[in-house]
Length: 627
Image 1 (cartoon, rainbow, N blue to C red):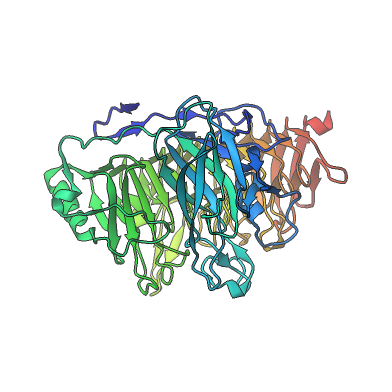
Image 2 (image 1 turned 180 degrees about the vertical axis):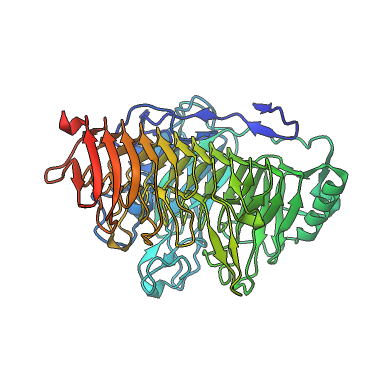
């Protein structure tokens, strides 16, 4: 079912709101997922999605398959498959006949699946391809294509590397990738079982299954009136599956698509991307201004960036657009690492201008999903998986926009990002290589609402860095690998001070991390979350949030003033409840009011509240541990 909004050029798929509370039915967990033993109160936190997610560890294993889970907070700064998995758990298949099975309790048929899984690297690096079999009601249905070409980065030589693909260097990270396909034959009916099974034809030594997303996509969107199809300009669709790498027989459609963009601008028409995969070869992107760019749906239309590797040219984003509406297609790339030079990685969409829209896009394997500035723009209803750096970065510098005001990100689903899943990034100044200094006004009025950020392997769930008047509400963050779940502060010596923000009704689960051995808290307020310990952070209100099963301390403060932490619920923290100046986050000065908060499940030896600073004034009243 589709509905058309008041903007006649904008078509949006109707989606479902998923509650935070766990719904366990025959091995099914709805996203946002909550592991056994963690049950925050039901809320509307998180994105509305067209799919349901089944965690592997909640399924039924067969044939000797094993469930693997993280049983304690990390004691090392390095990664593991369990640490990077959603729910910090997965199912491993190593022998023929091993499987994991679920029951379709969605109440709807399933015609499309997306599998997040890990298979081995090749001996020399660069990955392999393999298949894994899908069964329905106990009968073989189809072989699914998986690969490890865009995973397995090593940091034995350089900690926190996102580029080293040499297995000999040791200390691997980035284990999981996501692969999707339509179900062959009849859709999986409600009440039917479906399973992922390793058969003898499935040649990978192991399959670590994290989660499977299931859905029943709507029919492809028809080409709208007053539009120009990119095929009319010479763009050629390729039908071969990409599976982690480009099809060598594909045709470069970049020039044809840019020609169509130019025609759409001059004729004031919509640029139409029909069903199929269209390749953009080389290092140049597309530029557009003031038009709508639309596809047949994220399941049907794909623009694939194919950069020759190793690359020797710095890359801009694939789409560089100003005051445009961009919607309803899939963006993918062949980048095997975050490195924009050797790895051929560039952003998916850089945007600026006024009242721009990014809606209904599914982005994978690009450096960033959205790098966006301007005024009045919105990022909504998008899916971002396997992003090498930030999923959504709202800032005041993209494409030279110079401002970042009244921007919104809502109802987006982000999983497995290599940096912050979402960030407000207010920059005060930049200095060019020639020494020229460019200044920017602080960002204002940014809203993050009803987004889901799961399993970022190389950054925070949400970071609010600088500016003022921001609202971060009703978001769901879970399963960070190394860093803070949600932070409000300032970023970098050139960042803007944070003058005010409201952080309310968010749910932060299984978050925090041990990057650099720092035992980072799940939630942090102050100026040191980037390690710089500079600038001012003030007037942050943190209210009505749920912080559950943090790795270490639940809430931490560094230098900040006039913070209000009120009516939050903290459940089963791995460390202390609320801490001023936790390890590596000094607070030589500052002030906060901490009131009306509830804490349960505190472990023996830990404290509900700790103030490690003689210069930080904390007014602590009417909290559950004081009553």
